[in-house]
Length: 376
Image (tube, rainbow, N blue to C red; front, top):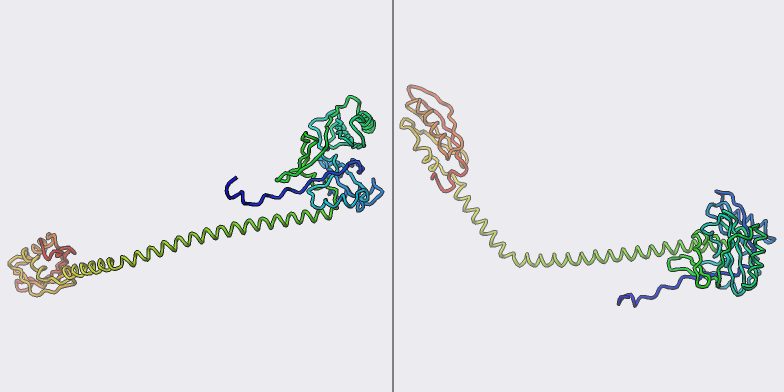
């Protein structure tokens, strides 16, 4: 047990399982119509075998696994004193003691007699060959010394031969409910075969309306418990989300403080970067017509004379020129195209008159042609 769980309240014990004396009940095995509801058939059988209506009886039944038959038992309510039934409302199950002995034997091809002996009562159950439920249940007041007489009686009533096997069980029958809701029975220190779970609803002898109300309450309590668990889970999830949000807020505040602390340094860096960019613009993004002319002038033939120059943007220049020799125009154009600083050279408006050739040179320099102020 951990340190924390020892402070939790202990789980309440499960409701008791009550076994009442079986000699107060009449017991009959009846045939059922497969596929039909069980409760109306049991009430109809009780009306035929009892002088009292079902409303004046404490009754129950045990259906067979195949649904073809059922063991029906009942007792007149006035046979039970008021003090005896006071604790029934809180019990998990109230049923006759012989129900704990009604589980079918594992194998009974020739029939079986199960005999239970205690200090005050003898209970004998007889299974006919191949039957899933006992066909006869005989209960007598007496001691173990009266067992032979009871065996003879039940053999006579069931028609089983004397060589039919007899299973003897000794000790008082008791029942309990585990924390998981499983019903277990014992005869003295011997564990009895577990009864099918489906018997728990039909074997109870209390009022059917009361049992239906208990089942509805159990379903309601189950859903309330699930709702409580779901609410606790949502609260736990919300707490985890809130904790995560608090951590994120703390990290955000820390980063904001760090940003504020480094803001002057960042501002100095931005100022230096802006200044460097401005210096670069002043050095590169300015008109440099003289540098352009000095770049293209060395290749100019002597007959070519520049008449007029106009810059086109930061890297372009147009030159109106004349040449005394027409061949020098193409020679000059070819020489310009071979210069590494020029991106494009075009010659247009070439005209010749009176031995003089006029033309226009459109020159575009590369972006890095004057990065360092001129050609290298």
